Image 1: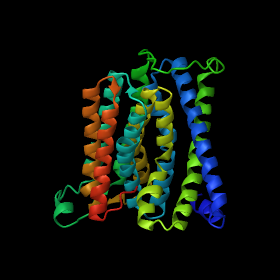
Image 2 (image 1 turned 90 degrees about the vertical axis):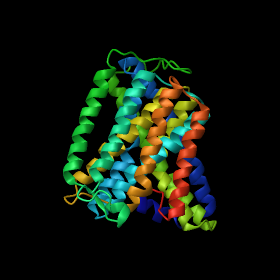
Image 3 (image 1 turned 30 degrees about the vertical axis):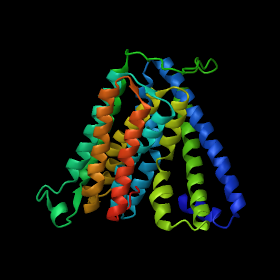
Image 4 (image 1 turned 30 degrees about the horizontal axis):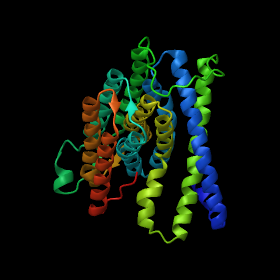
Length: 350
């Protein structure tokens, strides 16, 4: 689809592309608004906290592009791209997107649930690293540039753990209540709708977010190229940023509306799904597993774990509200990774 859009947009005038960009941005905002509104109503109707709705239903939708890209890459004989997509998305989601959301508005969260989900988030990432290490010679990626491998059986293991995570998340949340957060709005026209209908509306709105993002990124990339922006900069920013755009706009709209728990839940859930679903599904369809080259062992894996540990510390320090100052810390961690990647010649994209 991306290639078809690129071919369709390439011959268009710059003025037309600017119009496409403007319409896509408006559509992104509108569809993200609908995702947030429907998710809030689903939380109120079901009694499931918004942080859990974000970590399950919403994050399943926003990570759909990563799953599609990674599985396709694995089928096409490029398994390294699949792993890069998962790891890069975790770093971008936690460092950049959550950092931006905190700057827009301090994010109020139910601490106990966010803390519990956060431990699953960190554990999933650690598992991803452990399953990728060449244990016959664990230091070889650092000493002689050897590759690791994320085997096919590990992919099936991650998919099984994903099913357990989704089941346990909903089970734990039952009866815990949906804590109202600052800025909650009543959606009277929707509160009587069955939960199944609300889930369908969330999915359709997420499809709108994803399609708008898939149109926006090629248009911006073409315009940037016509403005003589170097290809390396485009690859390291716009193209790599594309698959995380659904998480970004959803987190921004949730933060703007005062639903910080939904924004945080979406990021936590997206990180878990990137580790278990994106990498897991790609490895499961690849008999030889996913190739993990030396660049993952430095700087990608350490950066991923560092950003997640910073987030865990932030949860403990900030408790029930992730502050703007913490947003600056997350952004600093992300841009530090970006700087190291550029300095070492590693493409920081996913």
